[in-house]
Image (cartoon, rainbow, N blue to C red):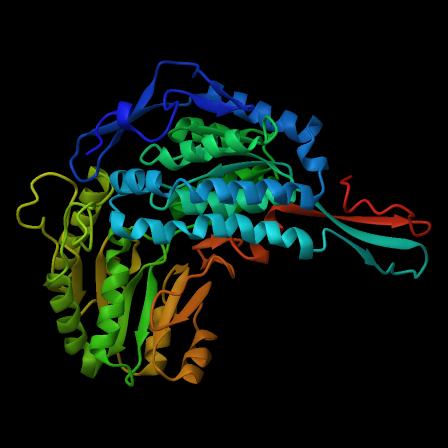
Amino acid sequence: MITSAADLPISHPQKFYIDGKWVDPSTSHTIDVIDAATEELYFTVAEAKTADVARAVEAARRAFDNGPWPRMSPKQRAEYLRAFAQAMSKRFDDLTQIWPRETGIIASIVPAAMEEVPAAFNYYADLADTYPFEQEARTSSGRGFGMLVAEPVGVVGAIIPWNTPMHLAAWKLAPALLAGCTVIIKASPEAPGAAYVIAEIVDQIGLPPGVVNIVTADREASEALVTDHRVDKITFTGSTGVGKRIAGIMAERVGRYTLELGGKSAAIILDDMDIDEAADSLTSGACFVSGQICASLTRVIVSRHRHDAMLEALSDRYSRVKVGNPFDSSVQMGPLASSRQLERVASYVQLGKVEGATLGFGGNRPYGLNRGWFIEPTVFGNVDNSSRLAQEEIFGPVTSVIAAVDEEDAVRIANDSIFGLNASVFTHDVDRARALSRRLRAGTVGQNGNRADFGIGFGGYKQSGIGREGGVAGLLPYLENKTVVLDSRPTADQREVGA
């Protein structure tokens, strides 16, 4: 087991990547990254302070204002995205070591999950050929020549969470780079390893200095990134509370922002759906990254006459989930990411009991696992949808089974939440699934499981966020539309050579 920086599959953990170079931090402050399964020190990284963040912003600003990157054509930038994808495909083994230790995901699924990362970069590289970065537009007067030009929004601050850091960084970085933006990635203190891998790839493929800059920081320095007027846009994935804080700061200075926030996603189990089949799908989803996923289907809504059968089926499956060392190929769920997460999840288990819900299974430390931040997958029945257990995001493997009178009541319950990130309709009738999908106030609605798809687009209604990531919609927040009206049609086409 890797326990020291000497064995770590990343270089320069004591430095930051700024302006195309590995640079020393402004102070000697560091952040310890703890192995979630052993509670032992995994490695230590430099902690960025406000001076380090300012240095990264300065580099990104200079690269945007004076460097070649925004002045390249989209097709030229796309070549770097393809090179990034190719280089990332060779780092899966390294991420299979890092990601489980930082967050608890089981190692056996990491290589398959990581395929999405190069796919994201290749997807946006392909958009260079199809997206209309410059298009003719008819003038309202009918005179002259009109153009609608999509230009980069500018300097982007990308704040990355700890649960799936490489994926969420990719779906921010790839469209930002295609658009012509320069970027400061602020890595999470709990899981900075992915950001260092990104920095190494950026260095390897020869991106111009200052185009991508990477630091790891906690809240004070992170807020310095948000308040810096040289940063044109913030893209953030994390809690709704922090998202509101960012939105307030950016509104004050009329900065652009995209927020992907919390969720309390509903799964409606229609009466034609087999209970056991639904339980299998829900159990698999509950175990992914130990339930530390904003899109997890944590509210299971089922007809009252089938409530007890649903609770029994989930309890049976949760009781058979093997929890343990994420590097054991037979394990189905690893630990939570931190002691703070374990305390949070355990507190909600106690709250569920106090609120009168029926504990079907779980809520305890698994037998024999005396070290590491482990907890059993947990399911409650007879949950009141107005309770805190049903309304607040727990960010752990805790499922609430909620009884509904009928289909209409199930839709009402599903929509009765401040969140609207994800949902699912469990039925084999595709027409009913489609009809109900249009009635659910959620950014994604799938059939028979969690079908969140960044390739199409991902984001939430209500307090689950503002804007979208992934798909064509994920490119738009990194662009500003400019109207150009000329006396006549220009003779030169600048789309291929840049501005």
